Length: 500
Ligand code: PA5
Image (cartoon, rainbow, N blue to C red; front, top):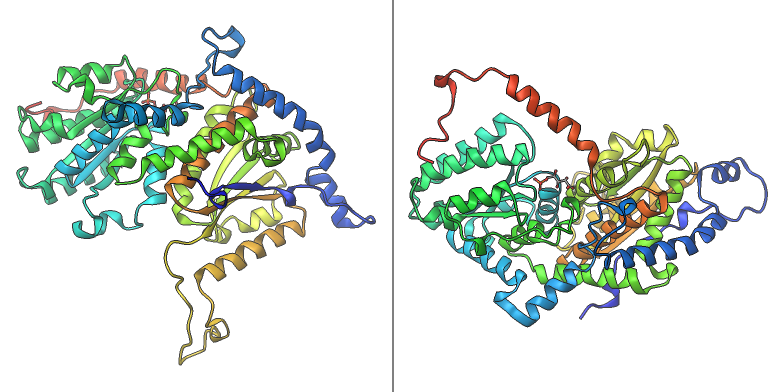
């Protein structure tokens, strides 16, 4: 059962123009750069109408041309997966994901996740947020059966890929020993993304060298996640992988909205995380979105406030994570926002930062630079570990004994208050998304809140949040150039394909 204090909330009071008693230079700045309460009041009805539209879009079998592409499948997916699991257990889609994850955990000690964009960022965000900060370095016993995780195929970059092969070659010597085995989760909805496909070909070659080209083990340690019809599915079938062992990304779920398909869930389950809690969080957020009035609806509030501020010229949208563990969640949001709303010469520009780290690089600009920013803080209330306390020291040259009874969370809290205050004093808008803690349940809520809010924001601004026609041009040009690049002389090619 979800406890009320596990809900994440959006607090945006500091974005609003305060009631001014008299004219002051600050009141003038606030009127120019913050959001008048009346404007927010005015948009509430529209936001509720848009909600009705987004909810209705779920039922459209044959959407009109102006709504295409339309991929609202992500909205009900968490609830459907949980219901399916309740009814059919292992025979359900979630059951399949859990089975394949368990197989990987039982079979290998290292898993390489291949994928890019929406087929990468959610699993990376989940790993960083919910696993130990030094997971891969921890001894097997402390990892409690959770394999080490590596992410590749998320760019085109020769040397890190070779570095990974070098690591695998040197640490995985005997394929008969579980602790020395490695596996692959290869994720691509279309199945023909160059980055992922090229990385998979290379990784597959390494795996064939390690296990032997005809080894049955290859079918056990490679798990593809792809669309119902794709080159990757064809390739996997040709390699003898059973269809039942290839989770399908549903057609009506777009890449960057696929965190709660096997794209995010399979790696999360491999990491030993509670994916049902994650889905419960997401499902609870959908319910709040559909049922709650504007004043208790974090999705509508976030969408409306951010939309209005973009319209008022705050076109750079900073997501400031007040925990390093949430940095990759901000990268994930970068993609969600940029690919969904960056269309037709419009759309906010996302920017990830970690506080307080980046206050020492970007802080000056946020306080004093171009007034084009809205900062959304991502704040965590409850830490996981006992606080690291400053303590009394014999040598007090650093003058810290005065804070001896304070810990890292107190320092962070003071910095958050101090930063928000500093920005408020010069009418720089900031708001807070507050997570009671970092857990599967809150990460599930957060992903679903931001995906829903992005769709609502798209509808508010008249931009189709689904599809990404703008990325086709670079892909086509890349292929043309690749065809024109002369082949490497044979001797210089690392012979990865040998034996495949
Ligand atoms: O949001 C999207 O659809 C994209 O960012 C894709 O996720 C990304 O291009 C990867 O595509 P695919 O999963 O087809 O390899």
